[in-house]
Length: 420
Ligand SMILES: Cc1ncc(COP(=O)(O)O)c(C=O)c1O
Image 1 (tube, rainbow, N blue to C red):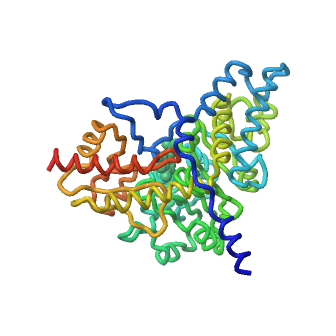
Image 2 (image 1 turned 90 degrees about the vertical axis):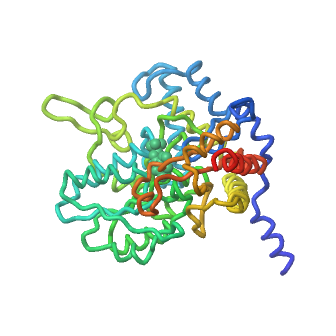
């Protein structure tokens, strides 16, 4: 019996990443900045690209470039197959029920705007409420403000605790008979907090309130299963999961997508057009007006394949280990205050150094070859709630190492020397 349990426990531990080997897959990591090896810790802003992605895009343009869904010739067929295979890969990545539940968009921002304009706008009336949280990225605030301004609905935000966790009791209270939609981030880009999205979806669904999850910061760090989460919409960006810029994914439950009007008009989203009337195409094409980012979708598919090949559990375990190490090491530097100490976090460490503006800290770090982000992280309302103008943020990807965390810590010591 004990033996059996031991075997099970062993199986549950994901294999360790061979980080040095996988770093070889990312040509940019060989760069030097200010004569020093690049230490790239700005992965929450965008990730670097493995050769598999760069090569997939190059291969597409050199062997398959054509427009999709239109031509009968061989190249168009090849491009269409590549594009649709990318959709199928994205569906598997999220465990969607069907490929047609995947809409290609420019990124998480466009995905959220699409839902705001196409799903929420026709639904909302004066007095209705859209519920978000204080820790949202501007991309999950402004589209709702815009739609509220058009419809007379009100935007409400659930507060966060001092540790940077969502106040679940307050969330429950905010789910009122007027709430028509919840939009919440899976992982906070400014704090790293992982929100209990599954539980939140359950609570909203008890009241028949649909939920959009902003997965921009979750998709790179953890397995995402939209069926398990139960959410109605899920958005993420290709460039944050080691894929190209300008491509992203909106997952939507089939019944919602089918009921929603198109977001933009143009080619490919129609079945038949006359001057009197246009019949729209079926989902997901109804939402993909115009020539899509074919190369981007193919690059994204390569990125998702790469991430899955490395193993999402192994990546998550490696990043968690790095985050724990960084939390301890950075937290031990005198004058450092960690911002966001939630019990569950993924890949992101925000902090302030007393007496030093985060921008100055970032600049000193840059001279040391260490790329971190400083600022409000497109989360100004959160910064206001925390009473901070800005934080410094180190964010980790699969290719980061403990030695790079050490370089981060040395950089903070250097900033203390230079600036205090
Ligand atoms: C939580 C979160 N949501 C949305 C976005 C917007 O992503 P994009 O700019 O790729 O559309 C970001 C980008 O930083 C983010 O961190």
